[in-house]
Length: 66
Image (cartoon, rainbow, N blue to C red; front, top):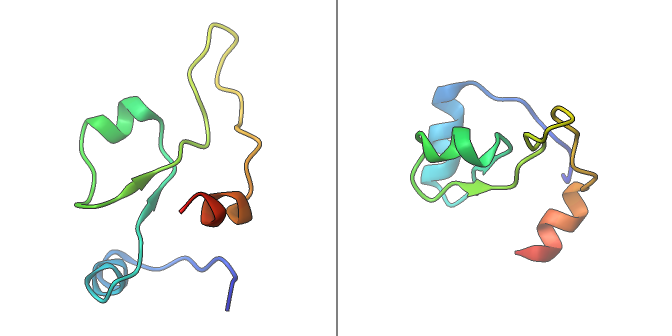
């Protein structure tokens, strides 16, 4: 439907198993510590000397990059 939906772990596993993408928005450092197989990492925040600014990216931009 194009909307964002929150699902539990079991539902996420089923969705990924049926061909859906897993979009992981954690930082690169967190992602590198462990992530689901074939997860796509698009960090929502980055660690900088000034803190953790949000990345100005929309879901539309993510889909266009795929």
